[in-house]
Amino acid sequence: MEIISQERCEEGIVTVVQLSNAEKMELLDEACTFICSEMEIDDLESSGANKLQLLCDSIEPAEVSSMVASYVMGFIVHRVAERLEMVAVVAPRCVAKNDILHDSEFIFTSYIAPKPICHLSSYDPVVIPAHRIGLTEEAVKENPAYFSELKSEQSELLLDIAEEILASRIVEKIPQEALDAVRNSLLDDVYCQARWQGKTLEEFLEEQKLETGLLGMMLFEKAKDALSREVALDALFVGLDKLMTKEDIDKAAQSMEPDCKSSALDRFNRRGMLSVVKQTAGRTIARQWLLSTCVVDIEN
Image (tube, rainbow, N blue to C red):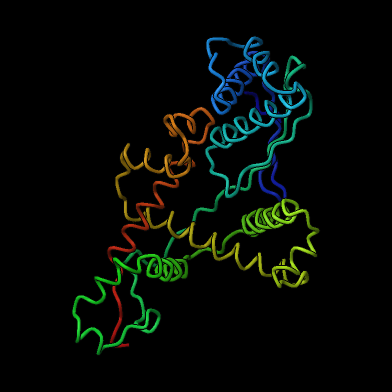
């Protein structure tokens, strides 16, 4: 994989990459194997052109071409991110400059908005104000185990508040390009939902009782909240210096691909997404620590 050029733009890091014919064929073979596995096509002894022909015999050739190109691009763009030693804040975008199935060499451009790395003003356990969870001094006196029970029964509520407080400790300002990338991803999701329901964006928003003019602002606030929490959890994991085990990574991979019948981690590895899985594992560890150590301030 040869990096031809690289520059920064509003969308993030733009990298033009060229693959040799050998690298391209290797990726095509991986993509075909992956698709055959997904479609439960059993004859996996074939390789290269034979495997591609196997797919063409099973589904329309034009559809095969689109599927293979899509999977190859998915494999490539994450490998570029790993090569650049960065994790994308949202799924990276990739644009081909020529035909991957028929051209001997393959040139493409990847657009990656890197995940920001921030620090916290404090790595101490979070203190939750009693009123945020409807807790009173009288309730604690009547049942001293009230907060422990709440941690068990209302863990999602407590974690939501704890993450919000943790995010307020971020020292640096989150880069605008990262916020824009998350907001645009959320906007794409809205468009996809509208198209899936056979509606225009305006019709979909009217049905959801949302004003078109306020959509951008609403999604930006949502992006800022989500990204702040994620970045804060990443910073907390690093600050805690917790050990990440192979079991943690396996569990994270499985949570990201719950329907995977084989090893989810192997699939992510093949797609160059090990760093993404490790990020998920780190956030899970940080969340567990955050919930187990958080305390409530009853007096204030």
